[in-house]
Image (cartoon, rainbow, N blue to C red; front, side):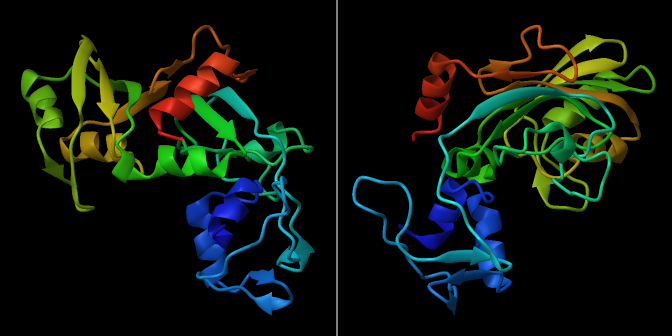
Length: 237
């Protein structure tokens, strides 16, 4: 198995982040500095590798059973898992499992967040090449025009490459639903700002077929077996 793939399965981080950590010289395999081309040997019938693996001098634990949680993130929680940040999501997670978000929400945004230690699933959900849909309810500071909605639906370049919403539906005079498959950093806020509007509330309501479904703000809920199976099927795992 490729090293980055194994690191993602171990719950250390996503596959993309694993590649970055290998490049940064933070991973040691069998007593040597790891390379991108390295592979690990799995024990027969097991998920752990036979070589010794270290990250920043600490041994990397073998993969844990996969966990999948939904979280209704409030405004003010930072999705970056930083020990020294009191607002970090890390402080709300159980310490016996290494979970990380499958796609972040800005600190000033709220709504649905999927947390897992399944690195392969997380990689496929986060990577823009796979085009998985996410739905958001957005409120701006004043009533918008029809031209604003039309502009959101059209290709746009606000200085970070071309973006486009898959679907935009007005909900009220100053709120709308928007479906994205790209998920660039602060994409919705930057799209609105480019058109002269300021976002005052942004809530993610759906990730593919997963919804908040009465999940209270600040609460966690485990995915059902049927939801996990459907999610894996949708991302072709």
